[in-house]
Image (cartoon, rainbow, N blue to C red; front, side):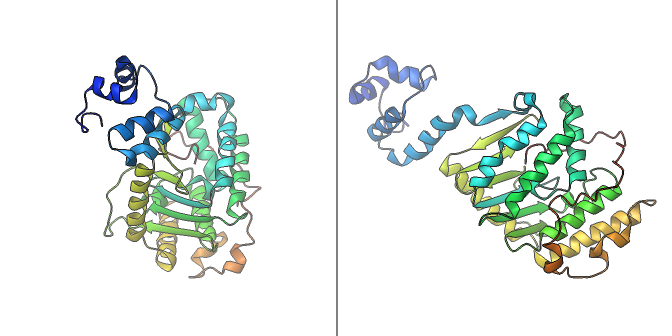
Amino acid sequence: MRKDARLSGRALATTLGWHFTKVSKVENGARPPSEDDIRAWCAACGADDQVPDLIATVRHVASMYHEYRRQMQAGMKHLQESSVPLYEATALFRIYDTTVVPGLFTTAEYAGELFRFWQGFMGLKDDVDAAVEARMERQRVLYTGSRAFRVVIEEQVLRTRVGDSDVMAGQLDRLLAVMSLPRVSIGIIPATGERLSLTQGSFWMFDDSRVRIETVSASLTVTQPRDIALYARVFDLLQRSAVHGREARQLITKAIRDLADESELPVNLRQHRCLEIPVLRSVELRSRPVADSRAGRPPHQPTGRDRPWQGGISG
Protein backbone atom coordinates (compact mmCIF):
# COMPACT_ATOMS: atom_id res chain seq x y z
CA MET A 1 0.00 0.00 0.00
CA ARG A 2 2.79 2.40 0.94
CA LYS A 3 4.72 1.59 -2.23
CA ASP A 4 1.58 2.00 -4.34
CA ALA A 5 1.28 5.48 -2.84
CA ARG A 6 4.94 6.13 -3.79
CA LEU A 7 5.91 6.89 -0.20
CA SER A 8 9.12 5.89 1.51
CA GLY A 9 8.98 4.56 5.05
CA ARG A 10 10.41 7.79 6.42
CA ALA A 11 8.01 9.91 4.37
CA LEU A 12 5.02 7.96 5.69
CA ALA A 13 6.31 8.19 9.25
CA THR A 14 6.73 11.97 8.88
CA THR A 15 3.20 12.32 7.49
CA LEU A 16 1.77 10.34 10.40
CA GLY A 17 3.96 11.95 13.04
CA TRP A 18 5.54 8.62 13.98
CA HIS A 19 9.09 7.60 14.67
CA PHE A 20 10.45 6.19 11.42
CA THR A 21 11.10 2.74 12.98
CA LYS A 22 7.41 2.22 13.70
CA VAL A 23 6.61 1.92 9.99
CA SER A 24 9.25 -0.79 9.59
CA LYS A 25 8.05 -2.69 12.65
CA VAL A 26 4.43 -2.68 11.47
CA GLU A 27 5.35 -3.82 7.96
CA ASN A 28 7.54 -6.65 9.26
CA GLY A 29 5.04 -7.87 11.84
CA ALA A 30 7.13 -6.88 14.84
CA ARG A 31 4.45 -4.49 16.06
CA PRO A 32 0.71 -5.04 15.43
CA PRO A 33 -1.06 -1.86 14.32
CA SER A 34 -3.99 -0.47 16.26
CA GLU A 35 -7.24 0.32 14.48
CA ASP A 36 -6.36 4.02 14.65
CA ASP A 37 -2.98 3.22 13.10
CA ILE A 38 -4.74 1.45 10.23
CA ARG A 39 -7.11 4.35 9.59
CA ALA A 40 -4.25 6.86 9.62
CA TRP A 41 -2.02 4.70 7.40
CA CYS A 42 -4.78 4.16 4.83
CA ALA A 43 -5.66 7.86 4.81
CA ALA A 44 -2.03 8.83 4.22
CA CYS A 45 -1.80 6.36 1.34
CA GLY A 46 -5.13 7.32 -0.20
CA ALA A 47 -6.57 3.84 0.45
CA ASP A 48 -9.53 4.51 2.74
CA ASP A 49 -11.50 1.78 0.95
CA GLN A 50 -9.21 -0.85 2.49
CA VAL A 51 -9.91 0.16 6.09
CA PRO A 52 -12.85 -2.26 6.74
CA ASP A 53 -10.94 -5.31 5.48
CA LEU A 54 -7.77 -4.48 7.40
CA ILE A 55 -9.59 -3.76 10.65
CA ALA A 56 -11.55 -7.01 10.30
CA THR A 57 -8.26 -8.86 9.91
CA VAL A 58 -6.74 -7.25 13.02
CA ARG A 59 -9.81 -8.02 15.11
CA HIS A 60 -9.96 -11.66 14.15
CA VAL A 61 -6.41 -12.67 13.27
CA ALA A 62 -5.98 -14.56 16.54
CA SER A 63 -9.17 -16.54 16.02
CA MET A 64 -8.95 -17.16 12.28
CA TYR A 65 -7.12 -20.48 12.67
CA HIS A 66 -8.67 -23.01 15.03
CA GLU A 67 -6.64 -26.18 15.46
CA TYR A 68 -8.98 -29.13 16.10
CA ARG A 69 -6.61 -30.98 18.41
CA ARG A 70 -6.43 -27.97 20.74
CA GLN A 71 -10.13 -27.26 20.48
CA MET A 72 -11.05 -30.82 21.33
CA GLN A 73 -8.88 -31.23 24.39
CA ALA A 74 -12.17 -30.86 26.24
CA GLY A 75 -13.82 -33.40 23.92
CA MET A 76 -15.80 -33.46 20.70
CA LYS A 77 -18.94 -32.60 22.65
CA HIS A 78 -17.37 -29.28 23.60
CA LEU A 79 -16.62 -28.53 19.96
CA GLN A 80 -20.29 -29.07 19.07
CA GLU A 81 -21.54 -26.90 21.91
CA SER A 82 -19.06 -24.09 21.25
CA SER A 83 -20.72 -23.25 17.94
CA VAL A 84 -24.25 -22.95 19.35
CA PRO A 85 -24.09 -19.16 20.03
CA LEU A 86 -22.97 -18.51 16.45
CA TYR A 87 -25.71 -20.73 15.04
CA GLU A 88 -28.36 -19.06 17.17
CA ALA A 89 -27.19 -15.60 16.09
CA THR A 90 -27.22 -16.45 12.38
CA ALA A 91 -30.27 -15.63 10.25
CA LEU A 92 -28.98 -16.95 6.90
CA PHE A 93 -26.86 -20.08 6.55
CA ARG A 94 -25.20 -20.80 3.22
CA ILE A 95 -23.56 -24.21 3.24
CA TYR A 96 -21.58 -26.04 0.57
CA ASP A 97 -20.23 -29.55 1.09
CA THR A 98 -18.38 -31.83 -1.28
CA THR A 99 -18.15 -35.10 0.65
CA VAL A 100 -20.43 -35.58 3.65
CA VAL A 101 -23.84 -34.39 4.81
CA PRO A 102 -23.64 -31.11 6.79
CA GLY A 103 -24.04 -31.60 10.51
CA LEU A 104 -27.35 -29.77 10.79
CA PHE A 105 -29.00 -32.48 8.69
CA THR A 106 -27.35 -35.69 9.93
CA THR A 107 -28.99 -38.58 11.72
CA ALA A 108 -27.55 -39.70 15.04
CA GLU A 109 -26.13 -42.86 13.45
CA TYR A 110 -24.43 -41.01 10.61
CA ALA A 111 -22.97 -38.42 12.99
CA GLY A 112 -21.72 -41.22 15.23
CA GLU A 113 -19.81 -42.79 12.36
CA LEU A 114 -18.15 -39.47 11.54
CA PHE A 115 -17.21 -38.84 15.15
CA ARG A 116 -15.84 -42.37 15.58
CA PHE A 117 -13.58 -41.85 12.58
CA TRP A 118 -12.24 -38.53 13.85
CA GLN A 119 -11.86 -39.85 17.39
CA GLY A 120 -9.59 -42.63 16.17
CA PHE A 121 -7.81 -40.59 13.51
CA MET A 122 -6.97 -37.69 15.82
CA GLY A 123 -6.37 -39.82 18.92
CA LEU A 124 -9.07 -38.06 20.93
CA LYS A 125 -10.83 -39.21 24.06
CA ASP A 126 -13.95 -41.24 23.37
CA ASP A 127 -16.98 -39.02 23.97
CA VAL A 128 -18.74 -39.99 20.73
CA ASP A 129 -22.14 -40.54 22.34
CA ALA A 130 -22.01 -37.18 24.12
CA ALA A 131 -20.90 -35.44 20.90
CA VAL A 132 -23.77 -37.01 18.96
CA GLU A 133 -26.24 -35.88 21.60
CA ALA A 134 -24.85 -32.34 21.45
CA ARG A 135 -25.12 -32.28 17.66
CA MET A 136 -28.72 -33.49 17.74
CA GLU A 137 -29.54 -30.78 20.27
CA ARG A 138 -27.86 -28.18 18.07
CA GLN A 139 -30.21 -29.11 15.23
CA ARG A 140 -33.06 -27.36 17.00
CA VAL A 141 -31.97 -24.17 15.21
CA LEU A 142 -33.67 -25.72 12.17
CA TYR A 143 -37.03 -25.29 13.86
CA THR A 144 -36.62 -22.13 15.93
CA GLY A 145 -36.35 -18.45 15.08
CA SER A 146 -36.72 -17.01 11.60
CA ARG A 147 -33.69 -18.57 9.97
CA ALA A 148 -33.10 -19.63 6.39
CA PHE A 149 -30.82 -22.45 5.26
CA ARG A 150 -29.45 -22.49 1.73
CA VAL A 151 -27.52 -25.70 1.14
CA VAL A 152 -25.65 -27.02 -1.87
CA ILE A 153 -24.05 -30.46 -1.87
CA GLU A 154 -22.26 -32.45 -4.52
CA GLU A 155 -23.92 -35.64 -5.73
CA GLN A 156 -20.89 -37.44 -4.26
CA VAL A 157 -22.27 -36.65 -0.79
CA LEU A 158 -25.10 -39.10 -1.53
CA ARG A 159 -22.55 -41.78 -2.43
CA THR A 160 -19.85 -41.33 0.21
CA ARG A 161 -20.25 -44.46 2.33
CA VAL A 162 -20.45 -43.52 5.98
CA GLY A 163 -21.27 -46.55 8.10
CA ASP A 164 -23.24 -49.48 6.72
CA SER A 165 -26.05 -49.53 4.18
CA ASP A 166 -28.71 -49.03 6.82
CA VAL A 167 -26.98 -45.94 8.19
CA MET A 168 -26.68 -44.50 4.68
CA ALA A 169 -30.29 -45.25 3.76
CA GLY A 170 -31.51 -43.63 6.95
CA GLN A 171 -29.38 -40.56 6.30
CA LEU A 172 -30.62 -40.18 2.74
CA ASP A 173 -34.20 -40.54 3.96
CA ARG A 174 -33.47 -37.79 6.50
CA LEU A 175 -32.32 -35.50 3.69
CA LEU A 176 -35.63 -36.04 1.94
CA ALA A 177 -37.41 -35.14 5.16
CA VAL A 178 -35.65 -31.85 5.85
CA MET A 179 -36.09 -30.77 2.22
CA SER A 180 -39.78 -30.33 2.98
CA LEU A 181 -39.14 -27.61 5.55
CA PRO A 182 -40.04 -24.19 4.08
CA ARG A 183 -36.93 -22.57 5.56
CA VAL A 184 -34.58 -25.17 4.05
CA SER A 185 -33.38 -25.23 0.43
CA ILE A 186 -31.16 -28.14 -0.57
CA GLY A 187 -29.63 -28.22 -4.03
CA ILE A 188 -27.57 -31.07 -5.43
CA ILE A 189 -24.96 -30.62 -8.14
CA PRO A 190 -25.17 -33.64 -10.47
CA ALA A 191 -21.84 -35.34 -11.04
CA THR A 192 -22.18 -35.05 -14.82
CA GLY A 193 -24.13 -31.79 -14.91
CA GLU A 194 -23.03 -28.44 -16.23
CA ARG A 195 -21.07 -26.47 -13.65
CA LEU A 196 -20.85 -22.72 -13.35
CA SER A 197 -18.15 -22.89 -10.66
CA LEU A 198 -15.13 -25.14 -10.27
CA THR A 199 -14.42 -24.14 -6.68
CA GLN A 200 -12.99 -26.80 -4.38
CA GLY A 201 -13.47 -27.29 -0.67
CA SER A 202 -16.48 -27.16 1.63
CA PHE A 203 -17.47 -23.98 3.45
CA TRP A 204 -20.17 -22.48 5.65
CA MET A 205 -21.31 -18.86 5.46
CA PHE A 206 -22.92 -17.24 8.50
CA ASP A 207 -24.89 -14.24 7.25
CA ASP A 208 -22.36 -11.86 5.71
CA SER A 209 -20.20 -11.81 8.83
CA ARG A 210 -17.93 -14.81 8.42
CA VAL A 211 -17.05 -17.91 6.42
CA ARG A 212 -15.79 -21.11 8.00
CA ILE A 213 -13.61 -23.51 6.02
CA GLU A 214 -12.73 -26.96 7.33
CA THR A 215 -9.41 -28.68 6.66
CA VAL A 216 -8.10 -31.99 7.98
CA SER A 217 -6.41 -30.43 11.00
CA ALA A 218 -8.16 -27.12 11.58
CA SER A 219 -10.92 -24.73 10.63
CA LEU A 220 -10.30 -21.31 9.14
CA THR A 221 -12.56 -18.34 9.76
CA VAL A 222 -12.69 -15.65 7.09
CA THR A 223 -13.97 -12.25 8.21
CA GLN A 224 -12.71 -9.78 5.62
CA PRO A 225 -15.72 -8.28 3.80
CA ARG A 226 -13.95 -8.49 0.44
CA ASP A 227 -13.27 -12.22 0.85
CA ILE A 228 -16.77 -12.92 2.16
CA ALA A 229 -18.16 -11.24 -0.96
CA LEU A 230 -16.13 -13.67 -3.10
CA TYR A 231 -17.61 -16.64 -1.26
CA ALA A 232 -21.09 -15.20 -1.75
CA ARG A 233 -20.46 -14.98 -5.50
CA VAL A 234 -19.17 -18.55 -5.59
CA PHE A 235 -22.14 -19.82 -3.60
CA ASP A 236 -24.52 -18.16 -6.05
CA LEU A 237 -22.81 -19.99 -8.91
CA LEU A 238 -22.96 -23.27 -7.02
CA GLN A 239 -26.69 -22.81 -6.38
CA ARG A 240 -27.26 -22.17 -10.07
CA SER A 241 -25.30 -25.33 -10.90
CA ALA A 242 -27.50 -27.45 -8.62
CA VAL A 243 -30.86 -29.08 -9.17
CA HIS A 244 -33.59 -28.50 -6.61
CA GLY A 245 -37.04 -29.79 -5.68
CA ARG A 246 -38.26 -32.85 -7.56
CA GLU A 247 -35.00 -33.32 -9.48
CA ALA A 248 -32.98 -33.27 -6.26
CA ARG A 249 -35.34 -35.76 -4.61
CA GLN A 250 -34.97 -38.05 -7.61
CA LEU A 251 -31.18 -38.07 -7.20
CA ILE A 252 -31.53 -39.03 -3.53
CA THR A 253 -34.10 -41.72 -4.28
CA LYS A 254 -31.83 -43.17 -6.96
CA ALA A 255 -28.94 -43.25 -4.49
CA ILE A 256 -31.08 -45.26 -2.04
CA ARG A 257 -32.14 -47.66 -4.78
CA ASP A 258 -28.52 -48.13 -5.85
CA LEU A 259 -27.57 -48.67 -2.23
CA ALA A 260 -30.13 -51.45 -1.94
CA ASP A 261 -28.98 -53.05 -5.20
CA GLU A 262 -25.33 -53.03 -4.11
CA SER A 263 -25.88 -54.49 -0.65
CA GLU A 264 -26.32 -58.19 0.04
CA LEU A 265 -29.10 -57.38 2.43
CA PRO A 266 -29.30 -54.90 4.87
CA VAL A 267 -31.45 -52.01 3.72
CA ASN A 268 -35.07 -52.51 4.70
CA LEU A 269 -36.77 -50.76 1.80
CA ARG A 270 -40.17 -50.72 3.40
CA GLN A 271 -39.08 -48.40 6.18
CA HIS A 272 -37.91 -45.77 3.65
CA ARG A 273 -41.06 -44.15 2.30
CA CYS A 274 -39.15 -42.32 -0.43
CA LEU A 275 -39.06 -45.56 -2.42
CA GLU A 276 -42.82 -45.94 -2.28
CA ILE A 277 -44.13 -42.47 -3.15
CA PRO A 278 -42.65 -40.00 -5.64
CA VAL A 279 -43.35 -36.80 -3.67
CA LEU A 280 -43.21 -36.72 0.12
CA ARG A 281 -45.98 -34.88 1.91
CA SER A 282 -44.65 -32.05 4.03
CA VAL A 283 -47.34 -32.53 6.66
CA GLU A 284 -45.84 -35.95 7.41
CA LEU A 285 -42.25 -34.83 7.40
CA ARG A 286 -42.58 -31.84 9.68
CA SER A 287 -43.72 -34.07 12.49
CA ARG A 288 -40.62 -36.23 12.32
CA PRO A 289 -38.10 -36.03 15.19
CA VAL A 290 -34.93 -34.01 14.78
CA ALA A 291 -32.55 -36.89 15.38
CA ASP A 292 -34.35 -39.51 13.26
CA SER A 293 -32.26 -41.95 15.22
CA ARG A 294 -34.39 -45.08 14.70
CA ALA A 295 -33.97 -45.99 18.36
CA GLY A 296 -33.81 -49.66 19.18
CA ARG A 297 -31.56 -50.70 16.30
CA PRO A 298 -28.27 -52.22 17.52
CA PRO A 299 -25.30 -49.90 17.11
CA HIS A 300 -23.35 -50.36 13.90
CA GLN A 301 -20.09 -52.27 14.24
CA PRO A 302 -17.21 -50.52 12.46
CA THR A 303 -16.07 -52.25 9.28
CA GLY A 304 -12.42 -51.44 9.94
CA ARG A 305 -12.11 -49.35 6.79
CA ASP A 306 -10.71 -45.96 7.72
CA ARG A 307 -12.09 -43.27 5.44
CA PRO A 308 -10.39 -39.85 5.50
CA TRP A 309 -13.56 -37.76 5.24
CA GLN A 310 -12.75 -34.08 5.26
CA GLY A 311 -15.43 -32.26 7.19
CA GLY A 312 -18.17 -33.38 9.51
CA ILE A 313 -16.25 -32.81 12.71
CA SER A 314 -17.56 -29.36 13.64
CA GLY A 315 -20.21 -28.44 11.03
